Length: 249
Image (cartoon, rainbow, N blue to C red; front, side):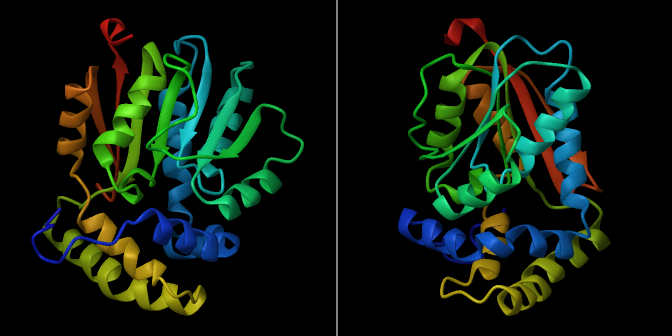
């Protein structure tokens, strides 16, 4: 998205790990305040879309899981359908994983661990659902991240990406840009002071991230079929998903 407007955002592994470690313990609170809780509904809709009675057998992987919000949404969805899947969450930040562990205490179906999205520590064809929410744009190589997600997904399993996108309505797009580019960085830095300007990084990373159409094209090139896109809240976020072709196993 408009990557020509400004220099590429710094996504070095050291910076990303340090930045998210520094804001981990306030991350959920700040996100809920800034999004008015809407981000939770996006994850709930994602879990409902991806995990249901027709989902193939197998476990679920939440890549770049952060504090485990999408994993928890999967767990709630699973209880509704009385499923017996293990939901694995993996993230680069040990502090984020620590928060996720605390939130999942007593929930045996949830397992969290630290790991690199560019080299997932799982066998090929391991999971029925592989999803990432608001995390792919934080890795330095989007293509490699998607390649790893497809690799660990079972044939006929689902690969999905949920992330921010630019609204299509002009007036809403302008308000969105102003909020993301001006209001959020200032308030975020005040709430979560850190040397890496985490809440200035957020709008920069969003505006330089692939569009939903570009992400859909990447997934198709990697062997994901029937790729679909579901805009949420007037296109502020978009879910992109499809199923892995058996020939890719």
